[in-house]
Length: 202
Image 1 (cartoon, rainbow, N blue to C red):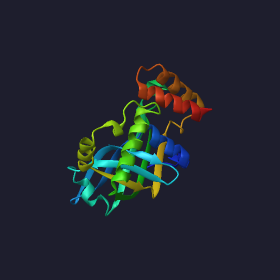
Image 2 (cartoon, rainbow, N blue to C red; image 1 turned 90 degrees about the vertical axis):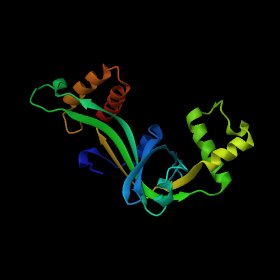
Image 3 (cartoon, one colour; image 1 turned 90 degrees about the horizontal axis):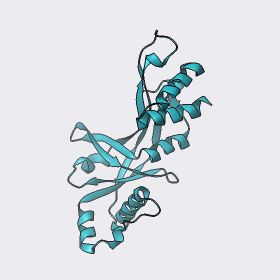
Image 4 (spheres, helix red, strand yellow; image 1 turned 180 degrees about the horizontal axis):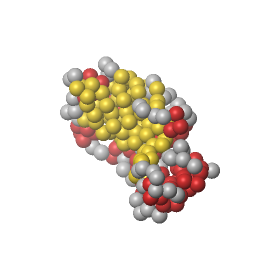
C-alpha cells in the first residue's frame, strides 16, 4: 500500500475502528492464475486478530484462497478537495481518504456450529443488540439449505497497513478552510472527512 510517512497510520486500534465502521470489504486473491476480488461484509474479532466472513459456494474464489496470502481492503470515507477552498489559487486539486489493508491467511470453516456462529455474529452486528431477525426462528430445512450455499471462513490478521490522508501536509489555517467547506456539503462522505479532520486538527 502506498502511504507517505505523513499519512501512515500506526495505531492498531485506529485501524480496527476503520474496519468496524467500514466492514464491507473487498477481498483480493489470485484465482486460477488471475487477480480476483469479491465484495464481502467481514466481522472483526479484535481479541484474537481474526476476520470472519463467507463466500457464496458458487464463487470459486474460495477454492484456492486458503493456499495463499489474501488481501482485504476496507475503504473509509473519501472525497474531493478543491483548491478553490485555499487562501491562494496557486494550488492543485487532491483527494482525502481513509483506508486500511489487511493481509493474512484464510481458513475455511467446516464445523456447522462454527459456521452458524459466524452467521449469528454477522446478524447481531448489523441488526444491532435489539435485533428483530433471528436465524433460529427459520425452519431447519431452510437453514440447512443456507449452509450448503455458502463457505464460511476466518482470516488471520498477519499485518495491517493504513493510510489517513487528511491534508496533514498543509497549514492549520488551510485545513480549517477545508473543514469549513466540507461541513457545508450535503454529502455524508464529505461531512465524515470533516469530522475526522477536526479531531486531527485539535
